[in-house]
Length: 289
Image 1 (tube, rainbow, N blue to C red):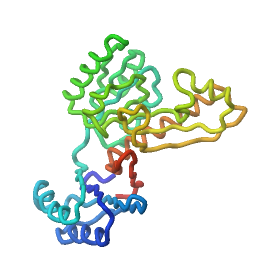
Image 2 (image 1 turned 30 degrees about the vertical axis):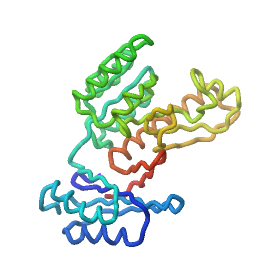
Image 3 (image 1 turned 60 degrees about the horizontal axis):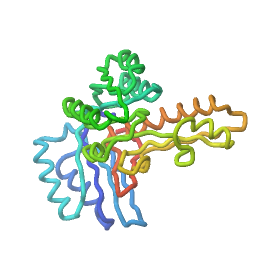
């Protein structure tokens, strides 16, 4: 990912000439377009666009760019956002007992594969502290039970505000966030779960999957909403299994898929590749920009 680019995410009612008018604006403003991706939803009659620009071509301030683009956007009735790659987002990771997703996110961040800062890890089990310590990320242990969960959410919200957190990654954090919490971070909380829901809820889903003889394992990463595990889906993956699989091997395969799906979803969000429309997402594939 280029360290010096400007990305516009655009959506509107589909009509002729949108791409021409938008790209003409950027050309006339002197920008080199690094990539231009688009999608037309013929069922909803909606149009979606992602444009990446070379930021070194910006010869005036950000507010001026937004003001000038607004003149075009208003005429075309565009809903849009603009992001600057030099502004790294602050990401908080929340975890419980399992470490595979937590470790993978921290490892990819350490390798420079996730364009963000990770100022803290929050967990309700102290046993995962060693993972945060390994990567030098401050760890906050908050023991949680049925009686203190409301109060502890307040503590978490305070920590998020103190660190100016832009994105929350629920790396197998096994507690249900309140509506008030979620509403303060709409489209800014990414959750991961195995794809057996809602058939195999609760503990030991892979044991029950084994007992049912499932032939496919998957995982889903989505934005958290009030509807548990039903928010807009960002990324999914599956892998076929067989009768020879044991509960332990099913769980291992599931962990591998969860890890891969969650990190992809986080990267798509950080790279500004996602537009949420209703309860769906438009996810633009990775390019060389």
